[in-house]
View 1 (cartoon, protein in one colour):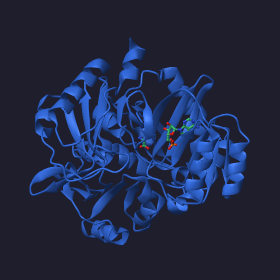
View 2 (cartoon, helix red, strand yellow):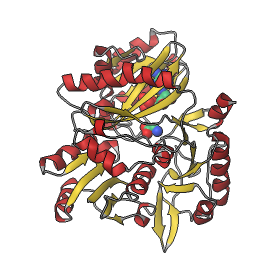
View 3 (tube, helix red, strand yellow):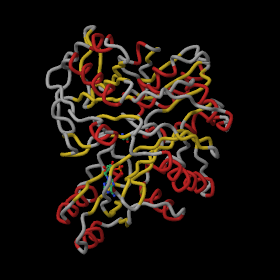
Length: 423
Ligand code: AMP
Ligand code: GLY
């Protein structure tokens, strides 16, 4: 089968890496892809949706896999399905679970899913009055898509008002800030639970934990994610079954009731509070960088799983996992998540992979004069397996040590929480 994968990040490199191992795969095309995916298939420089559809028809694509949230929210899966081409990823309506936090919050409430208390505002003056009336810290979120940067955790109400003003009046995220959600700040450790969903059946993947803030010890502004590990020891079997029963099953039922059945990967971002797991957000796609360690541990054929999701046959599938933990360390451009320079030559990727059980997933990279250079904030996801989480961490940092580019920045404490926990 010919497969077209849409996207160009570390997540898409990991998906391409796994798909390329499938016996069912004939040709893999990645649009637009990155220098990492170019080694696994053919990168296609197309981003226009109609051109993508025409390309898929010409190349007899049997499955299109849509990586990022933006094309899903734009209805790209619907476009392919309407043309009779299977698409892995939810419809435009179902993608509102991520693309419209106000909708998502209301649906959670109607399904009695535990989440932070929150309110939705369409006027800055109302948001301001509400925040000013509160003594506790608040979290202010743009309702629409903001590339992982639309959330402000504010311990001081003045910061909350400032965030709402930037989102609603200065429109720093454009139309995505027409509505804001203001919610209580929750305390606890975070975990990411990803599941394959085929409309009815749910298959929960191995757990993972992301590291959102830029600095060691979870300090500084939030990023797209600075590293991840899988499994997350904090997510016990018991907790996982509670999350399945109290979060995943009700939301999938709720989507069916709302007339938008959910198909694809459903990602629940959770805060594990003293009072139990609470949903921070739903994402409608694989997480980045959680996908890198999760897929490195997947032993089954990803293409078969994706086809089962599209066909509503997930109940016929069993997934096999490598029991060894995996750790992914994101190497970023100096200055990220603020301004940073691009075009820095990267060396040492092959030496890192020669260490064994290491895959260096490309994210913000480009080819220039035959050399791999930096081209984005998050540049590489250096991912390693180990027989223990400590060994996976050690191997991943050893690999990071081999890779050089000017201004390279990475957190030094990825997976430290998991190690303290298992000790
Ligand atoms: P979101 O995109 O909604 O997951 O938010 C991004 C990050 O902001 C999360 O991973 C959390 O670290 C943080 N966050 C979001 N909502 C809350 C909340 N209610 N309480 C505490 N932290 C939050
Ligand atoms: N790692 C967080 C996300 O993918 O949204």
